[in-house]
Length: 177
Ligand SMILES: [Cu+2]
Image (cartoon, helix red, strand yellow):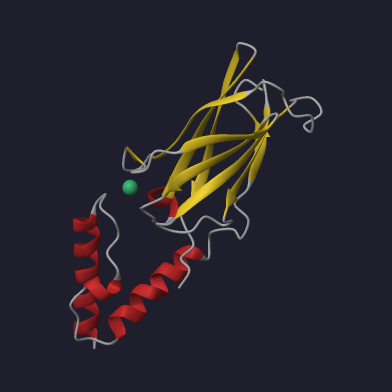
């Protein structure tokens, strides 16, 4: 029993080490005659997911407080390895409710600081009204616990020559099964 546990701990470490920045392999890809293995992996994934809030929406000022943003993922919380969108509102920084007419969302990207990489998809910004946008084509292909699972969503907002940015920390991700 102890020998088994040691073996699987070692196997898990090897898998973690070799997966690197590739997509996480599913437990069914792992050759295993040990029935407890898949359950152990699933328990580990659920333990990580427990730290992720049910609501991953964010609101706050941009870096220089030129704008106030609300950013809501769809679906919420963000699903692991699946496409999701962002609903973004660019609001007056004083009253935090009046949309900024003529604002544009010039850049949207996301990075994983612990691994120094971005997404594999190219997000597309769609204007949905004054100061309102939907960003399609977001996808987080890696997850982890703590710093290892942190993504940062980068937004660049432009209105009347005033350019400001927000960098939003997001923990990835809840798994659906
Ligand atoms: Cu990564």
